Image 1 (cartoon, one colour):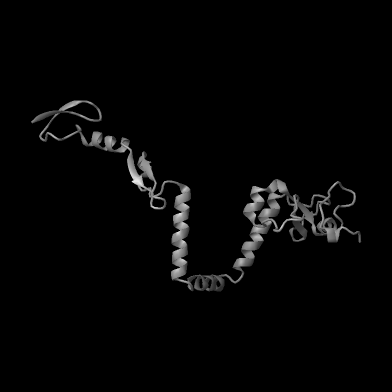
Image 2: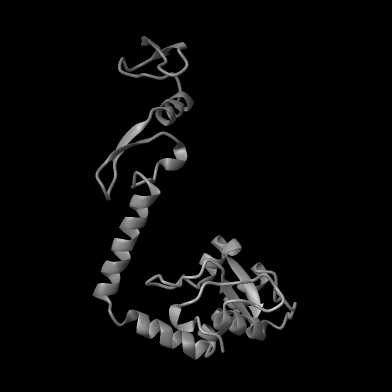
Length: 193
């Protein structure tokens, strides 16, 4: 028997082996958990530390590297199986023929709800008549603003909800009569009708 000092709790104990470092299984586990491990990122090969028990399965140094690796893996799979998405979309449409239409309508209604559910000028609330108007406009810019739901959620203050009539009036004349709402126009639309 040999007397050893536990590397975790410091308690002296008797052990059969001279190279034993801890007094119990509990101390051995705690010592292992508290000791950071070094690991190489599978994407960028950068060295990072595994400190917490929950990080034991981590393979990437950051979320950005994880996303890059997932994108690369997905792209590789799609290149190896070029017809797979066609089959998936056909099956999806067979199960629900209006899948894309339903998705678009649900996202449109959500965007309308986020923007106040009624026209800013006349307070019409029929969702079929409402348009989301982008206030900063992209007049004179080479691109149009994104129209998807995520962009509208993140930039809700840049949008206003107008009925079709008021949106059309604003687009044609650059202003809505009886209000302070104005909008920049293309040079070709500047003439009055």
